[in-house]
Structures are given as C-alpha cells and as structure tokens.
Amino acid sequence: SVAFYADKLNISNKYLIEIVKKASGKTPHEIIAEFLLKEAYVLLGNPELSIAQVAFKLHFNSSAAFGRFFKKHASITPSTYRMQQN
Image (cartoon, rainbow, N blue to C red):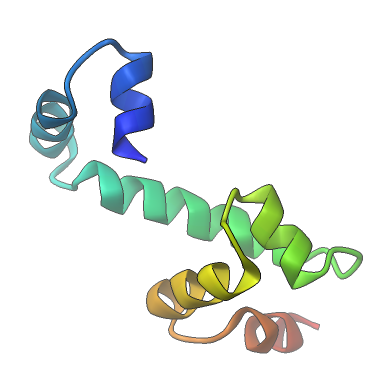
C-alpha cells in the first residue's frame, strides 16, 4: 500500500503521491499494481505453485481477492492465464 511506502520513507501519504505523480505521471497505486501484476505473471509461470500460493506470496488476503485484482488488470483470470502459458 501507499501507506507502507510512505511510512518507510518517513513522509506523508499525500506527499508521496504528489512526488511520484510528478516524477512518473502515475499514481503510487498504479505503480504498485503494475509491479504486482508483473510478479504475478512470473509466479503463475511456475506450475508447482497453486494460485492460492501465488496469492499468499503476493500478500493478498485470499485467492479470490487475488483473482479479482488479476482479472481487473490482465482482463483474464489467473487460471486462464496459466492455461494459455502452458
């Protein structure tokens, strides 16, 4: 979350959002989502990991929450992505 990174940098959420937006043209939420999606692609490429394990490794509360996130950003479900890759 943005709060996690703002806390690590000892700055406010608002200030972090402001400086990230100025520097990249994206919000911290967008950058975090892009990173998580890239990591999800990599982890889903490992057939030894279940989708629930991938969700856990990415710190989602449930595989359902991960599935919603993935579908929103990749336009397909994690299982469909996995089947297409194999």
